[in-house]
Length: 230
Image (cartoon, rainbow, N blue to C red; front, side, top):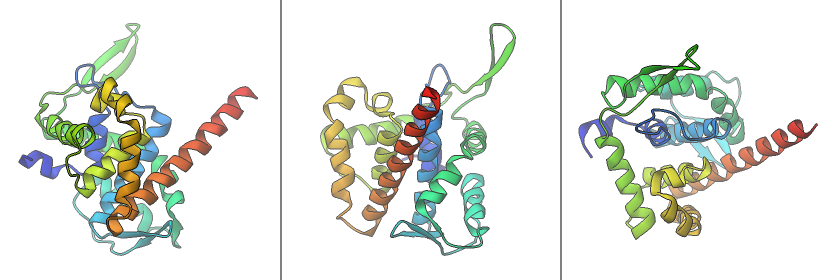
């Protein structure tokens, strides 16, 4: 990967994948996407040994900042808690901050020259910001790696498995792999995450995050249906 890609964390990459390159709009369900963003942030903090995810609990290991606005923001939330919380708690709490986290990531991607901000108007009155791609090389490198893993069985690194898991959870498979591959490899994608659980402790963390995110999404969807039908 080039130097820019080395500067991108999992949250950056997930948000980049969720934006339509030409339209500059988000293609993921906003209600679901926040929980996936939270999962990406928690996994990144785990990789950087700031937290430990074990038995569906998040344990604080270090308060030291990383000079990354999004990750430091999430770390501050966790370190500011008066007691140890469950993984579900942090998936929900960080997920509710998705709009704020998204703005921070977009600003970072714009500063890197990957995206640009364009102000559009809806019905010539309502202003709406879009973020079309200006440098597609970083995202193309990410997409190519993920595609080769899913479509051709290339060996995946742990961070790539986490992204694959999150892309699946927030229903971005068609966007990332294309309609045909997303459909034909749907079972394989879920199997990748499940099988990786037994590789090492990091694989177990990926599975815990994936299962917790999916459980939160199921409850959220059920609540939405009940509220709508009432």
